[in-house]
Length: 246
Ligand SMILES: C[S@@+](CC[C@H](N)C(=O)[O-])C[C@H]1O[C@@H](n2cnc3c(N)ncnc32)[C@H](O)[C@@H]1O
Image (cartoon, rainbow, N blue to C red; front, side):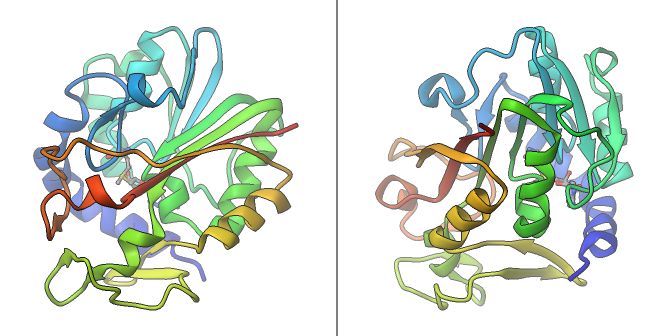
């Protein structure tokens, strides 16, 4: 399935509204993961990036990329959407790192070009993992790390489409998790835990950790309604994979 044209159209259409709503929170401080803005300082997923060649897959308006560039990383921000890249280019600090238009499915970079590839609900959510994971692995040097945060299968199977909220009831099958329609042909991707592990292993990666960020009971989800409001305090809403290429 080729979701590149539809995903690009979607993000070009919603970029301005998305940044208006979410940029104040995503960009509030450096290194905030996911829907609950959990600080990386609490999770320790990314480590020291000083002097490292870093690729953000699906950088959006570049909130993560410019923070890492300010820490001394040689960052490249890649995104599919020209509207999202334009938002990244307008932000203060954008002159510190290059922005590249491209798709996580087929990266325009040489094999072994990066020490770290990462994303937060970016290319590993919006491109088929069986294409995006091997591409990410290809552009890593031996010893390099792929770190990415995506929604958890728990979150997906408990999402009630009609009520537009996450619930405590299983709403759809776990087996067969694959594509999720986002409207107008746009698609996100989700796998079962077993399929994620097989996809990573087939790409030659080693799993070092699977962090399940646990927000505080009163932490707000900036994107989705949940019932109860402290849903993610009880069940993992996200999974933050930490892997490396041997
Ligand atoms: C939810 S945003 C993630 C960016 C940032 N971390 C944030 O939270 O805003 C998803 C980003 O993925 C980009 N994207 C969608 N499909 C992509 C693809 N196939 N390859 C690379 N980026 C893609 C979108 O344009 C969008 O900027």
